[in-house]
Length: 495
Image 1 (tube, one colour):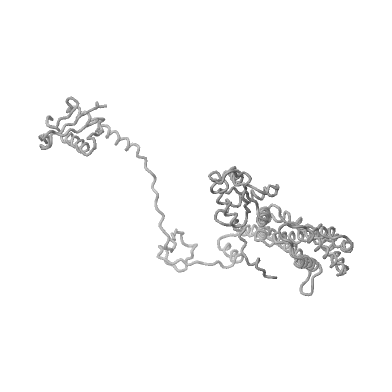
Image 2 (tube, one colour):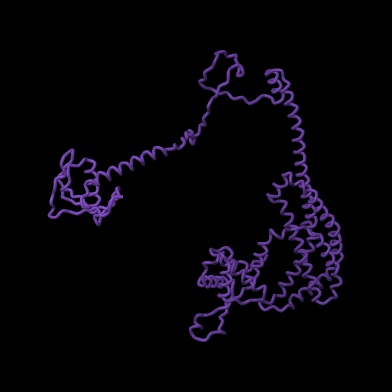
């Protein structure tokens, strides 16, 4: 392998695949690639923005974000911008730099690769034995192609390389599926038996075709003279050099080394060399090993099902023998012969026994229950859950008591209201609960901003302070209270 400076450089064009905002960059480049396939190479940012806004994921997307994303893709080399001056009419429009964008060559190949990766699970792999036949026909034409022009040789060379590449890729992808963890698990299930025969038949047909055609290809390759091969391959080099390219003209020596190297690998694949055997022999071995593996797994499944069926009959017969046992002692003897000695457990503790005899066995004493608690730190006693009690009657009783209290207060206060007010200095002797209610109203209204409150009895009460801080004596059944001569104005009726 030759280490070149280009091999050591990072490929910044692939950065958009895994960077922070790849969910925006990837749809943009996919849109450019789809337009590229339709030969619409140049796109404006407005066209990109309108296309993205058609999707629900980009409903909050802005034209400024689109411009920023395009600038980043230009910076990484994914897009090539060209300033469009065809519609510029003012200096200001020229300064704003309206750009058109197109995909770079790297981005075209990267998008092609990502599309192939996205469809890998859809396409699947297979063993195409017909490719061996096509390769055989191509090898048999070499002697004839030595007298043809380089165009015919170029077409033949490309077809041969494509068929050979497909053959390699398909067989490797197909064989790799048998070595995956999913395949291993599936081969152990009984459902695998349903298509085991078809799978084995498919592989055997491929092996038969491989044996037939690969031998013919090997025979043809050995008959071809090296000078004929060189003549044909040089014509293939001339064909590649004759193709006009706008970007970079390939180097003749590099192209010659590439084509001759591919032919060398092609021959080694079928013929092998001094260091290693041919790939055809390896393919034989791999295919045969997979067939043996499939057959081995199927045999195990069948054997396990058969043994389980036989053991089931044995268990039924043993159960019948236990049923026919005369007593428990005979059943114990039969158990010792059928299962051997069980692993016994000795439980030590302070137990209440019905007898002190050391000769009595487990079956001689009455059974009892023993609660065993795990000896771990995380163990907690199970909490007793109590159901939610229905307190509807109690709630109803308390509500009726509250309504009754409100009505009593309402009736008591109504007798002290004169001209829609209660004058603390003009009140007669009052009971303690009325005094408590009036003082509560005064306290609440005193801290209110407008000195107004709404009482529980349905009154709107306004507190009026006395002029010159006049005081009065509030007489009650349990004593007198010296206090300011407040007035409570009742601005609405009782309801």
